[in-house]
Amino acid sequence: MHPFALERPRDLNAAVALRAQAGRNDAPAEYIAGGTDMVQLLQEDVRRPERLVSLAGLLDNRIEAGTQGLRIGAAATMAAVASHPAVVEQFPVISEALLNSASPQVRNQATMGGNLLQRTRCPYFRDVGYAACNKRVPGSGCAAIGGENRWHAVLGTSENCIAANPSDLAVALVALDAAVEVRGPGGQRTVPLANLHRLPADTPHIETVLEPGEVISVIAVPASSLARRSHYLKVRDRASFEFAVVSAAVALDMGGGLIRQARVALGGVGTKPWRLPRVEAALSGESLHPAALRRTAALAAEGAHGRGHNSFKIELMQRVIVRAIETAGARA
Amino acid sequence: MEEPSTSRSPKITGADMTRRDLLEAAVVTGGALVGGQLMPGCIEEAAAQAAGALPAALQVVLRVNGMEHRLALDPRATLLDVLREHLHLTGSKKGCGLGQCGACTVLMDGKRVKACLSLAALAEGREITTIEGLAQGDQLHPLQTAFIERDAFQCGYCTPGQIMAGVACINEGHAGSAQEIRDWMSGNLCRCGAYDHIVAAIQDAARATRAVPGG
Image (cartoon, rainbow over all chains, first blue to last red; front, side, top):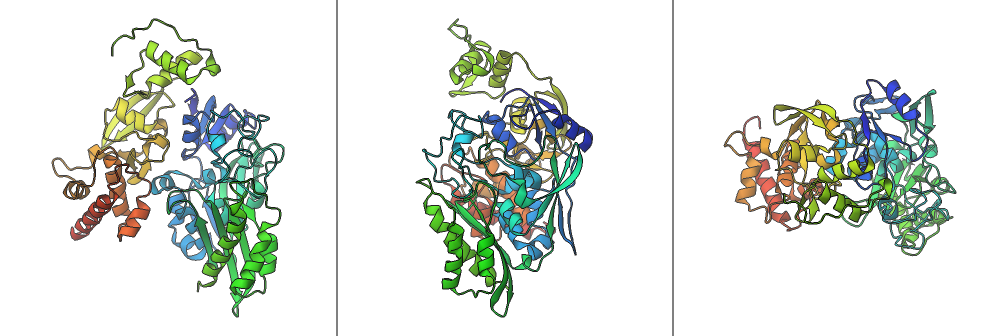
């Protein structure tokens, strides 16, 4: 691990000021909260900050459910949110996405805010033995495009990066139109989850719209008629403790055996959490008949671009959508 | 440790250091090689000295198994390394160091965590319980007894982590069935493959815990 100074500021403003002094990328200063991703990145020499600014004790960890929806303090652990009665009952897709993430130990440590900002699992990003990674070393190239890319994205990719966003939680949240409240040197602002992550385009090393010093303080999920009938389906290489090959978050508003409204988002296949508005629009007014679901799910493949090893995901993601909708539709 | 027989000095220039340079630096500066692996702490020191800047030590108070310890720590020290190297509580094991194997599982404020993913300085103020703090005097925890009775290990390296995770699994109420135990114990790997016996031991201990009034 590269040497760093560890700052333990007394309040959030002091933390923001310390972090804001540093630049946007490859910053000499970084935040650390739960630490489950950051410590891995430090151990593997992927991040080499001169300073770590601890957020321990500086952010809210409360989980509040009301008529407006859910408000989750960014410091709440994944485990606390996953088992919260209101989340389990009213927003099952969030609870399921969390319980299908990582391991029980990591879920006790990792925070909700940190989960949304975790770095990709692309093995070329995580291994400094590879010279080419535009995320790690801008301009160095992408070893994944011509390399082992079974785990990589097929949606939202560029010629510079095909790394998949690894968060299950983000997929559930983007399906439910969640937003994050952000604190920074300029005060507070709200960012819809759909806009939090950036497409890689020409700058894959800039992963979010957060400005230097900005920190997620609250995750807000609006109340909706769909969230109760929601489901997270995760397909992976082993039954537990593994990142998604393909996953789907779906939420349905049903009436008279027909889908009134649907929300569909995919994980494991996008460079960011991937919402599917065209699939959602096509599902409106449809039945749960398998042929109808297959036909609408096919719209997910629009714009998908396989790179060889990961091309199977384009078919698989359509099947995962169908299965997830069937499961959610069968819920009372 | 014996003095290295080589007098060759490593060529080290800050960020350009290779792994081989690091190994050489560790040997020359007194880092200990154990079983082919560098002892944690030693390699850090060698790297920091080579880079010319050892970060200032942090004064940290850690509460482990009911005892308070005042420590001066390198900010990079993980909780696992401090437990093992500073407090000599070597029950918690270092497997992968990346949160994947679970051999380092300890309880923090009663909840299971991976000590290798926690910076020790950020564990200040938390109540940490290691495998050494589980028994009450000579009275083993029911899960320790169950591991012995069920022969739930071969080499034993993952066992402390399995037991700490298993205790938490039972306390959380996630030991209702073999399938549930397997799912909720997925953060702990056993390369000997003693999984069937581990699951049986957790089921035994869960029953024993339920049988105790108020347990």
